[in-house]
Image 1 (cartoon, rainbow, N blue to C red):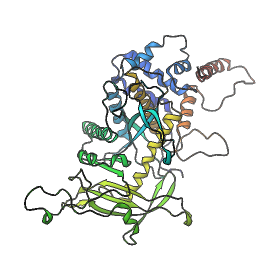
Image 2 (image 1 turned 90 degrees about the horizontal axis):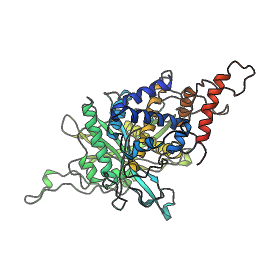
Image 3 (image 1 turned 45 degrees about the vertical axis):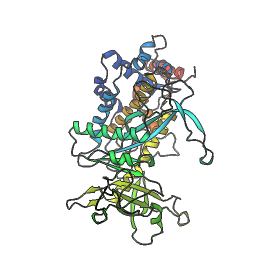
Image 4 (image 1 turned 60 degrees about the horizontal axis):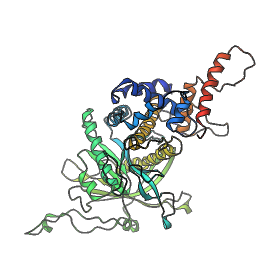
Length: 476
């Protein structure tokens, strides 16, 4: 479903170079800044594995000294905090101050084979069967991404803000990155986001974080900063408690922090009344939902943070719908003018935003399968983390430039064949094709051989660029 409100697309490269210039304060000297920009351009042009060597081959720099590009990460010549702060400032153009700043948070693993690389440990392999889980060697990171408000057609896009290590206690020690749990890294990212938005003049704008069940812990609910709302998945058997009543408090001794035990979330599925119906538009299709709101309630470990429970019924495939199991969400409650607790936004709007958390999974798939996350061969204690963070930053800059130039529509690059008209929103492959066309001067498909020879010099330059990209695609 096309979005009629999407503006006309603009060229990508002017927006990309403007974003790169905005990140100049993250580099102490001009030379590291120029090398970082050159690596990002080579990243676009490389067809094979995105190691530093093959990226430089794509730039035609196979005969130059490569050590300076490796020292960019091993010597820590990139200030990652400034990079993250600059990306956040550039996303404000896609986030109006009158609406909540929408972010998603999730953890992901980068497979490694080394047993001595800093930050690596044995983790559960996500590709193995649930009934026989396996393990693999990997690094664990927590990803905080900005999510532009969905378009009328229900499209959004994850723009990484931070990619922080969350190494377990048994991981190989990484200097400067102490071990921490997944939820602790997520809480630190949300606190950072609130502080940076305040510094950028958005203190009145609320933050809405979307997370899965790993971020529905009591300590995280208790540690949420002011003006940050969290919408997180919860288990179907989660223990919930009513708010304590004053008449139930003991006359002497310690005061009760919670009330009576409330029904577990999946028990509400047996109720026949009290359900509401709505429709949410997600990625070009309309999805009917049946839901109910229960609360306020409390979880153990967060006595001062009331929550509301959102129960969403599953779909019945016998009625022609896609099979979808029931889902349960907990959301932070906010006080109203009378002092009572209420939802921060209407429930149907919260559920529509909750569907957009899937964009983080899309970003993880693109980063690992196409963009080359974890492929640079950087093994020093500093580069083992900084090279990963720089790769995610490069992905964020390319996607953010695409959002500024193309919006959330399909983009001007056509599909690969006449049999498919393309999706309602541009993909990473279409975005790369657009960058390569502009870098190589191709507005349309050009033939290598022309019947008339007036453009031999143009074809020679075109072939030189393609030769470098082909050499970089070889697995050396």
